[in-house]
Image (cartoon, rainbow, N blue to C red; front, side):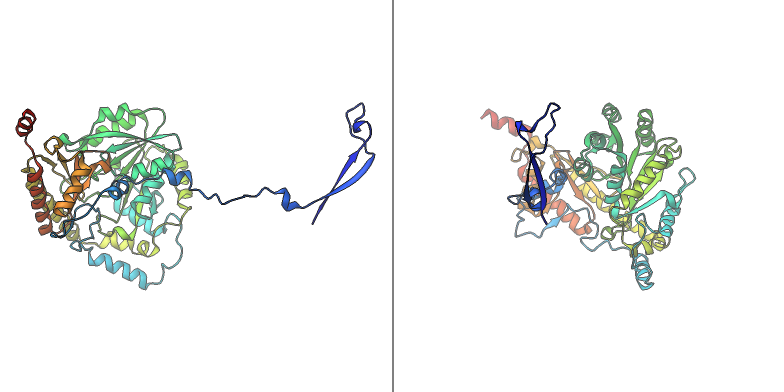
Length: 454
């Protein structure tokens, strides 16, 4: 198809006193519409700005490490936060049976609502509801693991240019998600000398008019700490004074060797999005079943946050329908002995690790009370062979085939994190090797001074 354009020409330059073109000569030009469109001369496919801003600090650090284990010693990986790796912590048979029955029912092969089946949401609400923080099905958003719960919570509370308050040391995913969305991360300090309590004065000093959310991770990854009820009241007081909502990452809730108190029942006014899931307590991280519990006793979130979470959940239809179908039975039928057995094992391994490493010159472990981790401080001045915790842990692999995660990955240098889910004999062997490694590289201060004098 061609477009016929008539160009009208007139004498006297074709302009009259009114500046209007008059027609005197008629011509036509044929134009191919395809030529009117601009077209690219070469391929120019580039990654999005969001993808370029997305960085997992753990992967960035670990991928850059030279990890060549000692061929004479079998590898002991104390770096992976997956309790299923070594096969010594299986989930309970009732959990497996619930999923088998869900499959055999043929009821859960299709799409579910983006926020989850209503019956499954009600099961979660009933499981976690208490008089101080009641929940109904409408207060639950089911997600693909706790990671998606955290992503949705950050996305609904924050806009690009806002900032969020994140613990240091803390789970690296918070920063990964926030930065990719154009949200600034402000790190508040945890205090190892106080069993990793929050430095509340430092926390409050970071708040400004762009602060959209405070993330509280309790029990903690990577610290293994559990906040007291009194400390949580102080955290809530800071949030209340400054009108900041809280994202409570409680994926390790009840995976503790002491009393655990969820944050929401302690709040009289601060609205809280509590994120959790099956992954850790039920030892099935690969099943990708998480949830957001919406606690809003004073209706501060109103309808907007709830509607926002629903809309965000509709971008990608949520968690596995089969696991949703099994959820009510998993929550209600798992025997208490299963939880107690897991906690007992983790406590025992933590005590072994802490006891063994406490007597190693140059190391300062901090005894955990929950989750699956223990953080160990390195007195770097006594290990002059290494510049930092990354080099320390790298050489630990090379010489002893023991891999611990350097805490630089958690924004907290000169520490390393140990996962305590390995079999007991492996935990003991790992501690022996760490002791041997430190003995080889440790230099007392007096010896350092003597060498400098020479």
